[in-house]
Amino acid sequence: MEALITLLPGDGIGPEVIASARRVLDVVAARYDHEFTYHEELIGGAAIDATGGPLPEPTVARCRTADAVMLGAVGGPKWSDPNAPVRPEQGLLGLRSALGVYANIRPVRIYDQLAGASPLKPEKLQGVDLLVIRELTGGIYFGEKTRTANAASDLCTYTVGEIERIVRVAAGLARERRGKLCSVDKANVLETSRLWRDVTDRLMAAEFPDIEVETLLVDAAAMHLLSRPADFDVIVTENMFGDILTDEASMLAGSLGMLPSASLGDGRAGLYEPIHGSAPDIAGRGLANPCATIASAAMMLRHSLGLEREATAVEDAIAGAIEAGARTPDIAAASEPSVSTDAMTDAIIRCLN
Image 1: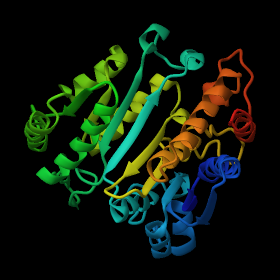
Image 2: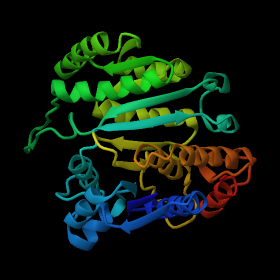
Image 3: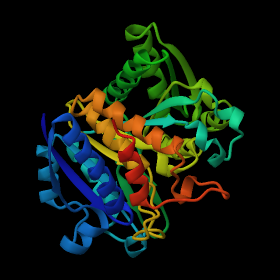
Image 4: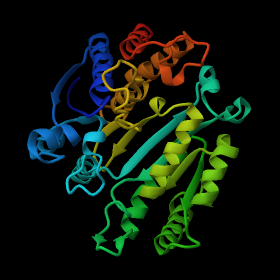
């Protein structure tokens, strides 16, 4: 097949991990007789430096015409002033909104060989295989914001339609897995969460009666995610809660560098990115872990391009490289040697069948 992929390397380690993912995709294309065409565009701090804004219109236009978009990371010390009127993160939020990708899918997979990289006891990690589905284009991140000398506010708003569509995505994925859905809210305090709970309860009873539903307050969910992570199958929650819980869940896998994500809307095109940030402290040093970005490329092959066999092959190659002992510094034990970004990518390509 032929596919047009827009690459947004961004800032920090973004260009390094995107380069690794492209190398893997090129091998996939050659071995499975596909043709992937790439266009590289600016976003984040790099775009601010070049154009004055974090999301230039040519970037948006190119992303809208692509079959899929792969993003590295945005941000860094150069643009870190939270009071600055123009910031790299605005590019990411604007892109999500422009593409209408409201469902963020973040799988958490535990590799037995990396159990020692997690701060949790190994027995807590046995059987952990979960998805966090985060609503991505609503809530407090996109609400009206005010700021005066003495006060500030951020408005959190959700509609019935926004909640219904994300819960349907999560419940559909639960139906394909172990049939368990955990909805996370803060209904004891927030009116938006009370609406979230009412809509979720009604929708699940009417459309997904075969799915086992658990409802947790976000503070309880944060605790149970560490105390009983293997009990979770699919977790669905709103934007800010999902942002926090998925970073917490990364500790189950041992490193932010291991976890991919897919952001999907109503069509096949999607936005794919690792959940980690730009890590400016290690940028340009060959220390970045490319696994999350390569796994995000696998999700792209599956969800946007419909290439399940190829997606599984890439995921198996990551597992094979780890089983063979390849470790970037973030996942290497004190007694283990570590390899560079390029060497980790080489190891994954060697395991790609």
